Length: 199
Image 1 (cartoon, rainbow, N blue to C red):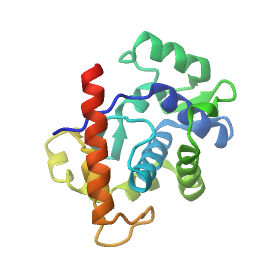
Image 2: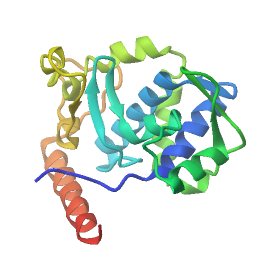
Image 3: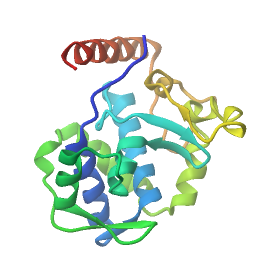
């Protein structure tokens, strides 16, 4: 069963806004979406669910959360409601940068969401987008697609692969036991099944 979760655009907007605030008011888009990935990955591996429920693709510069990328770019692929909500908080500066327009609403986040965001920022916020891209190339969920990316610009990633432990502990390592992995995957499949019934 393919795991497909309902994207939470409010959390994605607030995460992107918070990252810009932490970076002095504006931030490189690629850096921001790498930090979104690292926060989502932390939460997924520690608590069994992502923060944003975004759809991830492997690309040359690492994993990309598709919906969050669209928000950071204020893309035409966003729905009217997504665009309207995003425009309350962020604005595009140029092709590579967006900025925060006003303080965010952290009430959309759980305590564990905020823990994951703090982890991503505190551990990796000092790095630029290219260092972060290189770091994500160490991870098994991206490496699985490395050869395929020689022939494709992007490849769909599966949340199940995010639970694989690397052979060498990477810089963003959180160990996941086999028991937790199976329990978390079952939980995600159940979330996906329930959401598909209501869509």
